Image 1 (cartoon, one colour):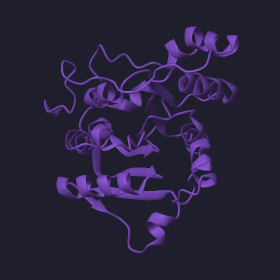
Image 2 (tube, helix red, strand yellow; image 1 turned 30 degrees about the vertical axis):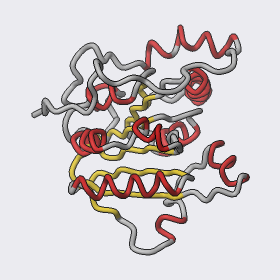
Image 3 (cartoon, helix red, strand yellow; image 1 turned 180 degrees about the vertical axis):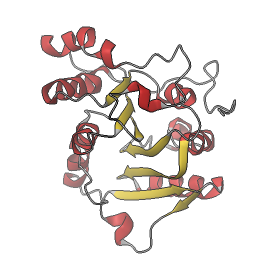
Image 4 (spheres, helix red, strand yellow; image 1 turned 60 degrees about the horizontal axis):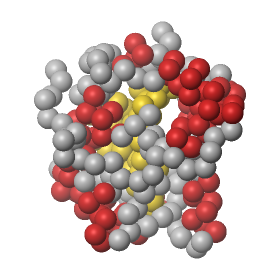
Length: 234
C-alpha cells in the first residue's frame, strides 16, 4: 500500500541551481526530441505498483540514482546489470544531454529518466519499490546560509526510507567532509537506516565496482578526499 506521506511540497519548495550551461551540440539537442520522450517517466499519472513494468520483461529489481550529472555512473551500472531497471533524475540540460548520448551509443533499454527535480520523482515512487538509491556527489552547498538547499534533509531522508525496500541500500558520495557529517547525522536520526561501515576504509575507499565520475577526478586533483557512505534500510 502506498503511503500518503511526501517529502516535497510544490507550493513551498523552490528548485536551486542552474538548469542550463553551455549550448548543446545539434546531435545532443536532437536527443531531447527523439530519445528522451521514449525514456521519460509520466509523473502526471500514478506510478505502477510494480516498477518492473516500466522496463523490458526480463527486468527484475529497480534502482534509483538522484542527480546523475553527466551519467557516467548511471550508464556504467546499467551496462553492468542489464537485468536491473534504473530510474534516474537530473534537472540540468547539459547533464541530461550527456546521459542521453551515452544511452543512445550503448543501446541501453533498462534506464528511465525524469528531467526535473528529484523530489518530484521521489514523491511519485511507490513504497518499498527500490532496492538501491545512489546519490553521487550532490551539490554540497557549502555556505551555511545555503545548507537548507542540500538534498539530504530530514524530509528527504524520510522519503528515501519510504521508497527503499527492507535491507535496501542508500549510497552517498561526497568530497566535502561537512556534507558527510551532515548526512551521517540525518541518517542516524531517522532510526530507519544502519550505517554499514565497520572500519575506516569502508568510507575512505569506494565500494566494489564503483565507477568514478569527472567530478570525482576534479575533486582528487584539488586534493579533496571522497567519502563513501552506505546505509541499509532496516
